[in-house]
Length: 205
Image 1: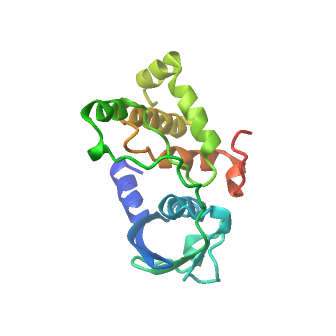
Image 2 (image 1 turned 90 degrees about the horizontal axis):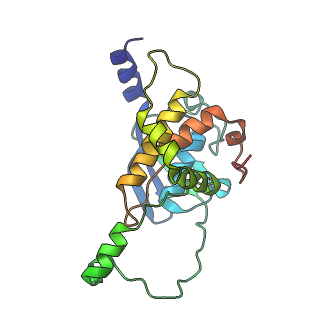
């Protein structure tokens, strides 16, 4: 297919849905119907902190949404109202009172803004995130990624390399004020690794 046809197919795969979780409602969440339900659950984890292994997504055909389900078989439609069931992870109370950027003295604000950016945990990606941060600190790898030029033909693993380059570039541009969402890189890892078929803390393998 031409690049233009591919772009149309990509847009067609994106579907907006609404998700109700307790008293909260998240409107117009973009769901990529060309990807597995696991990626959508990771999006919900990033929004709610409900662990993927504990969540139930209701409102589709066949009962709770299964990780290996096909979007075409569960009756997914644009604008659907789904329900998320599950309890968020509870975090320990901070030892010190939180200080917001707008309340900080100028020197403190400058130091915070100059601190390196972090990566959001998308369910079971903390080890993967740590690996990305380590790779970011290798100058030779950083230079090689910046100089990398994709081939005209799509080679195996090329999309993963490009996704890695993008997320490392976003980390370089960012700061500790806003965490980076490595969604595209995780999506490519899902395609390349069998371990992502199950929600386990095993991405170090």
